[in-house]
Image (tube, rainbow, N blue to C red; front, side, top):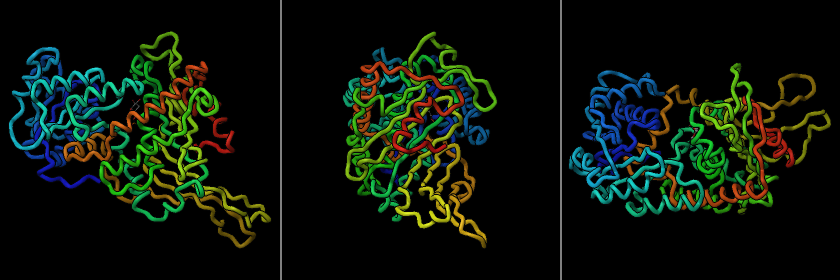
Length: 491
Ligand code: BG6
């Protein structure tokens, strides 16, 4: 879905701030290496790693090599390819507090046609200062691009401050806000499923759809990030970004084309149409949970408050479930259930669209019950699309019915090609100046505005996180959330 590579949209260099940090090591260097190996980086494209530590180029390259070798792309590592990859890389020490603190970047950048893409893999508090330092150093021109990632603020006000600081140095069309879920192949396929197949559109509305469920369940805990996570929680960490983006792709109107503004215009309209959840309805429309000790698979798991680095007490939610309404003609009355959590029964991200039941059961007299049709889009760990249908069981005696799945396994259909890290796609799209799968400023702020209502609602009602055992599907109140409408979670 990426526009073909053209010389005009080409960048000549990437400057990666936070080049020795966690995200850079786990995702960005391994992704860049894979793009290099696949011949997808332009000839002469420079990779400049920038950080505050004083490191030699050799020491830095050793870190990059180690990072690739323990990453999801480790099996791609080859000495010959790494040697040519390393030729693109230059490490520079920077200090944005000092006048001339970015001179090292200036010195490293080779002149030439094409813009420079800056990637801020740093704490969000540095987004504004780095943008201003880049501007003051004269490093920004109309071809420059800036890439940042969540968390963009912690509420509407702070998100605006971050966006304003970036806007002081870059035009909005130069800003690429990553939501790595939009880089996942299966998530992009949602757009293809909806808008490259005519059969779904007539059914894709409140007349035919009973309910929608979006689950992003993780088996892992807070993964050594307790202090960060504790100040964030599942609602801000997952719902404000990834879950709402998935919801937008499911609920949006058909865009006028696959162009950045057409796609993003339709997504933001969904965000504007979300029915507010506030103090009035927060107790009936949301569930907050926090995991206690339990088991994930056969392994014992400690509770959230016993994790490494944990404080003795905290009410931060590690699980959230929501019943969301979309106030527009297409979706009025259809509940969208969103659920995400850490230390859940298994890693599973999926979207389930359940259609209305058949209007009349002609098989009732022979004792058959009809299960409603459902379209299940599994995003991870496996990519699979399943349509459940009622089917006659083969046999000569009386008619018996069973629900059967019609499966499309992406792996089997297209061959087991390597599953790419989502950042590979995102980096390439920035390089090619294609912002369709990046989040626009108004989307970020609209999402926060809706999330702010929930947080205020929790605060005003004193809603305390409910315990759930590690390895379960969350607090029992989450079951009640769907059952109140006669629905149940797909598991
Ligand atoms: C990140 C969150 O944005 O997404 C993490 O901060 C979460 O808490 C991660 O674990 C999940 O991403 P993925 O790609 O593993 O589903």
